[in-house]
Image (cartoon, rainbow over all chains, first blue to last red; front, side, top):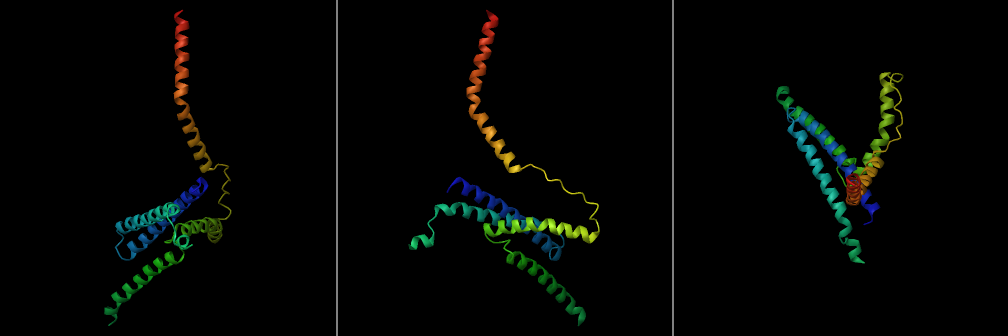
Length: 75
Length: 113
């Protein structure tokens, strides 16, 4: 993996992280207002879930260059 | 009859709204892979200035908001150059420390003569 590619992967990771935390925050607010009587914990929970999803995506993205992919195996 | 139906209707409305929000988030790729997430961020960044303009027009605040001046400052460039500068200073630190110590000692020796 070249350095340029690594830089792009990190950029994607950060952008994805921002999007997912924001989405989690938004959904958390909606759920908190609708179902959980405006408590704070659904907001924290959903934001943290978004962060976790972004972490998983980032981990998978950074590891993908070291893994043998299915279409390469078939060749 | 209507009194009994009301809580059910309320719950159904809440579930519809909550489910709809979740569906919209999933459908627009916000909960997908890294590529989809970064694409969504680019689209959002591109869509914000026209959206702000439209809102300003709607509220009639067009004339009041001054133009945000374009600052020729890139945080990425600043950060990168900061990192390079720090690392190069650290790598030259032992050499420079030896040099300055020797110069200091030489100066003291000259003073002592």
